[in-house]
Length: 92
Image (cartoon, rainbow, N blue to C red; front, side, top):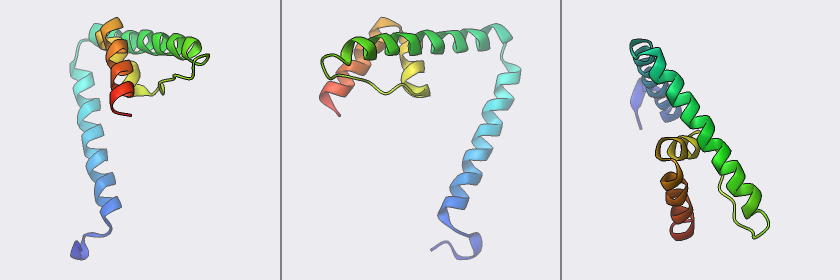
């Protein structure tokens, strides 16, 4: 399919590695305060999702806690958690 380039998974791994190097390089250029704020917001988002899952476990409603859902909840706060709930109800 790709001739002498190897398998598609290897190409995707290289692309992911290059993107990861770019993101890490950008992080060194960002102010350290912003980096700590992103980490803090992600942790707060994860805590809000954990609380939602703790309460929702009794009614059979949970949302997976992963870096994307934690950052959505962290960046947007309570509206982000509501957005994740609506997303789960209408899409999943």
